[in-house]
Image (cartoon, rainbow, N blue to C red):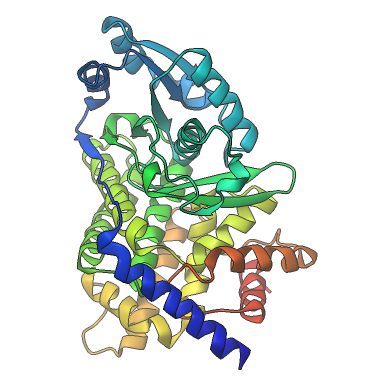
Length: 404
């Protein structure tokens, strides 16, 4: 009886969000795309009459020289800049506070998020702290806790996976409790997205794989959820097509600029889809595994997704069958359940071809009670998943993911 009541409440909650969707203050970033387009950012800042900017990135990208063109052009245009390059994977509250201090120290008026999901998340949280100076990061956890406008945010992705350049989410970690949680607010959607495939050419194959499957997870979870719309379905299907056609090519031939550009566009479209239609238990579980065991988010998503899709069973089979038909991997004579299974096998095969493992043996059963609580707190009632899961369901899933 209790599960029935909770399920009804969750579905009503999700339905209210879906009904309100057209009325919510969405914005789509202005998109700059094409090889070398990052060099246009200083001109953009000049048009916006912004003379001081904070660049949020990480030390690896600095060492690789990926920021060199941007920094050179900023100097030519006379724009003052400060660089925060201490962002860690799964950025921490300490990262955010240190970058915030630099933002104020150099009198910055805009933020450039340069990198993968971690610098983007850190930059969004810095923007949130600028707009809410008296509100700690931990108090922004959840939905619509920021509200006020953030400084101009220019997102420059160097991986094709997170879709953070178009999403309303920032995921922050508490280094003391190992909790990893999202901050969701419309004001966190970047104002500009810079899709320059040249910046992704130096990605090592394992990061190309993990981030590509991260984008696939966004597209799949948004498509099979119950809050998708005509727009989100279209974006998700376009994203899945681009990823299906180009991910293995980008993995096997890292210098293929066309494949890299297609993956960036696919990641962006998957971001458009899931920021409006939400994700599901794959993400909720992945966040706990990242927080407890340090698994990169994309890799965790890639491993977890087939397990969760199988666990949904008939609740997701019709939508998964549509995806199998869409990319042409299922015989037309198969039942929807068989087509859904074909799509799950396809995802497993993609992982295998790119060296992504199928299980996470590091999961400790003693950690499960806390991990399950955190995953449920993130997913229920917000995520419009095909099937509502409870504690005992998640325990079975975690053990399945572990390989037991």
